[in-house]
Image (cartoon, rainbow, N blue to C red; front, side, top):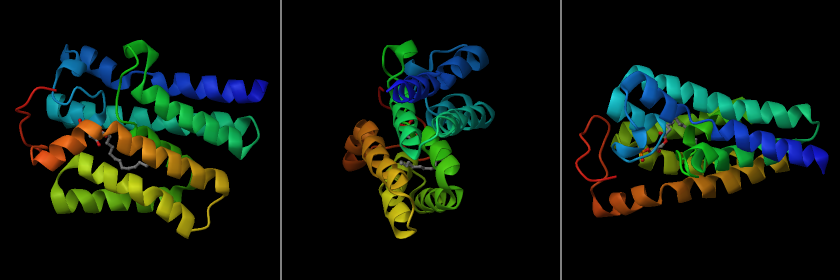
Length: 200
Ligand code: NKO
């Protein structure tokens, strides 16, 4: 129980580190939550501040996920890995430093998957890239990759805890995109490079 508590609490606080909010403040002098989609994720930083800060947010947010996997692994069981990882993606989108809001947990999930099973993670990233190539819509591509994640984990015979993370994480990531899904269905979701015209 102590180890579970360490994994869960440690994972949550790693995920809750508000990278996108900090980069918005320090790099752009803005509150990223008042811009574009209102998300603190790399995509919203890209459309608001540009490529450099977006890459920084992507890398740090992915690293938070990988660190949560490392923490769980150090505690000695793949189940602690899954607990720390799942709490990390909750921490990212429900950060206690941002009034329990945040990003959509895509980059943090990618970091987690890279640390769990990097070849599968690269395949999932490949699905995301395919989505981008076909549509140039980040949210659609993230949802596609989130659906592909458990399928690819299952079809490559990954350990059960990792499969369960991909399943629960995939559902969670789709759920963080509910506003995007409304816009996708309404045909108003902006593509990469398009200006944000509606309110967040
Ligand atoms: O601002 O609502 P927005 O348009 O920004 O943002 C939508 C977007 C939010 O996500 C991000 C992070 C972008 C990361 C790019 C590389 C991710 C590729 C890997 C996908 C992993 C899928 C999740 C697996 C769940 C287990 O979507």
